[in-house]
Image (tube, rainbow, N blue to C red; front, side, top):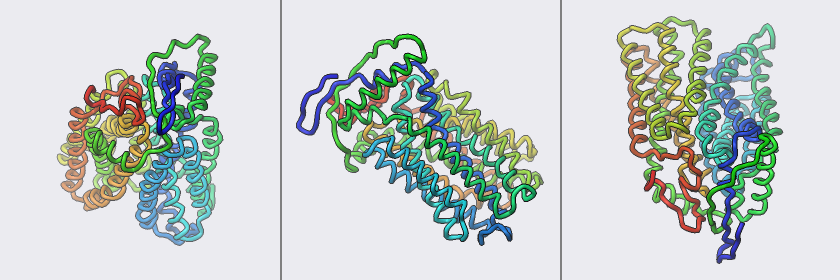
Length: 493
């Protein structure tokens, strides 16, 4: 590694990004996925568990003076608000202080808040720690997605990101099944079972935290912030482990970059970069997050009411249908993820968005005609969400790889907060009203709104998506500290 002195810091020439990208898949990469990615399972468990225990919490003897509406209304809104604010707060700190410090801190915040939720004795306590649980989870999205993208080789980045973000639905299935057991009063008292669901989340978070301690800081972040010797040690250690696992010598790393090291990036520079130099990419991020948020809300915020009102499914049985829907959501990223690295980002992102929207239009038409049963409606939702889940996961992948290194975590945080706010605030206000009227036409309209926005986002992706497959992050968007200056990679998609 060559170094030279500059006015604001050292100028270095390095092959570290190329060395990381040329690595074959190994057990070390799996340890990164397990240590960082499994937190989305906890998020899925959290949201599902709270929805399932709402009725139990409102019953006499639960140990908490709260109504079901307060749990799913105020409690859910505070969780969403915490997630949005946490993403923005922790996202900024992740870019300033590094990925590792923040992915340890945010998980610790989640762990403590979830454990304290289990000890709730009054409504205000429950609301406070629901907010703080969301505050920790929101920060996880920025810290984890940025760290994973910077550690995973370029040719695997798409499928890994999709699988990790899609694992949320494994948590949803686990939360649904866990709730059935925990809320069985023949097994646990009414004031104990719901507490155990939160306590288990805290225990799982502690296990993940212990594994996560061994995940290194991003060498890419270290390089830019003047800690290149530490970056060299980390990458050298990774190469030794990968070589030992594979039993063969690594190929030479091709390509180097020269950067002017810096200590930080101002908000003004971030805003100018994201909304000025990369405004086409920002438009893409807006479209993808809004489209997937409204499609999901069109289905999920009314699925239980639709099954009970139109198909006479007992309210106690809707959880089984949800488990099937959640399985379809997970299978999408699992089975389609590789195609985002081989067929390409533009085709797969636009294709999954447009296809899921078109399928939801078809579902709305069949529902309006009265051609569906509870089983066939659920089957339709599964097919729609199989493609929509891959598309939604690709939204997180997209905003985590198309902006410069110095703005990555903050960009993820901003678009995550935007999508979460749209999904958790405006979505429920619109779709709960439509699907709750009991009128077929209103539910059809809810489906059509979600489908229309998803198709529109797919069209935007067909025009603006960046062909990021198998390309290094520095090639997609050069760091602001790059010696040649930041490049708008959209000029050569």
